[in-house]
Image (tube, rainbow, N blue to C red; front, side, top):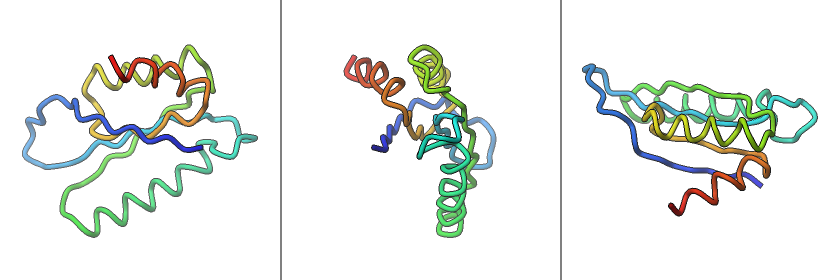
Amino acid sequence: MISTTVWSNKAQNLDKTPHTDLQFLAPGDENLPFALHKVVPAVLYAVQTLTRLKTDAMEVLHRDTECSSTYGPLYAFELYNSGLADVLLGPLCPYVLAPVARYSSV
């Protein structure tokens, strides 16, 4: 199961260069099928394809949620509240996704 959450709560970009901040939350555990080292290449390939199709630059950042029901949701809410992410992919772990999904309707 892959979850995609798109939030547009980014603080106003004051520099002149248009860009999109894409951030994703995934576990660093190499034994999981959706671990960071397996997801990063696909995300970077998608970003390269998108930047060829349009002029906006994209910045990709990722965080290891550790599949933690504590740290993962805190990272997601931190990104949302800070306005640092135009697009948030994930979280990819059920233990992280459940608390984020419960608050998404608030």
